[in-house]
Image (tube, rainbow, N blue to C red):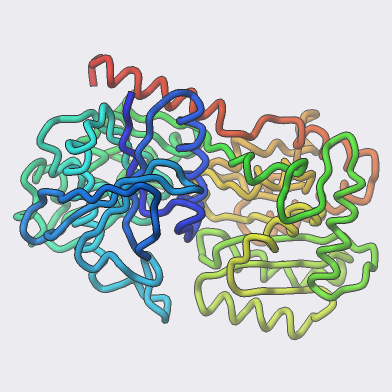
Length: 460
Ligand code: GLC
């Protein structure tokens, strides 16, 4: 079976958030289970490929000229790098000041049109789309290749002006949303299968509270919508083989102590014995970074330290810098994303803090548990599916706030710090978190089942 997997991000080529990480992990696991996957990615940076073949793509005039270089990349396997007007940029989504590029609708609209042309060119049995950047593709697919859309985040929908309607050869009514078009909303109405990135998120998004305006469209799809939990890419995220941090496994945590010391050295602190709370996050409201920063005023009293690595909104970055300046022995903040350092945070941290307001799946909490770092999370989305609260559940692996607000987060942090200071209890939590299979193997199997239903031509 041949699948065209279209995504705006693919680690390590381009990764602004979880999408790039998830796309890399899932496509690799699909290939391992025998699916032939061609990954279609915008050619933002003119990457070099092995054995590349140029391919002209037939697209409407407004999206032309469109072409792809189809070949193989050492890190990502078979890939089609798609070139459409305006796609080449230093950052996929935003300009130097953090504002979205003004022509993002055109850039990703043209990418979506090119993806549909590419699906014919490569003879895809299934086209697997991801998020709004690819969501217009079904409007251009002439040959009815079965489609799957994974929703990684409903917070970005691809709204555009009504002049777009004339650009869509098919499904105009589905994409029309009042006086505008909604790329994700339209795709939700027309694709054959919808996947949410966790089972709990699949139940949240069909409610008015969690649907971000698309709950009715989602609910009306019934059984075509299902939740499949993301995995983590264990080629990169495995404490036994990690390329960037001291190694260890669940039977012998010696290496974790070494990693902790390396982390302290990196941030320039001497060990006071106080637990290290780590955050690896995008600096956005969704991730509850403000809740974590509010809670930072209790660090002194909690006798804990906070280490934050993140990039995103200027306001939150300024707040992080200010915290680190005013409490230099309690808070360390680095703006930016640095892959090797992020490994050190997961490996050397004691507690991972992830107080998301909503979280379709979340990968950091799984990476933390794989590395024996105890997660403190809010009760939303995939965090509910992956973290069981150790005060309520004998099989607990972390701490889940009872409410998604500052008091809930502070309470859960207190509970986690108490557990971390109790050696036996801490060890039990770590062992349970580290022994679970967080890999993409299980999730990929479920995705293959979905492809199988479609390829067999069973009712869409
Ligand atoms: C988005 C979501 C995150 C999810 C990731 C990968 O970044 O916000 O929850 O884990 O996509 O699916």
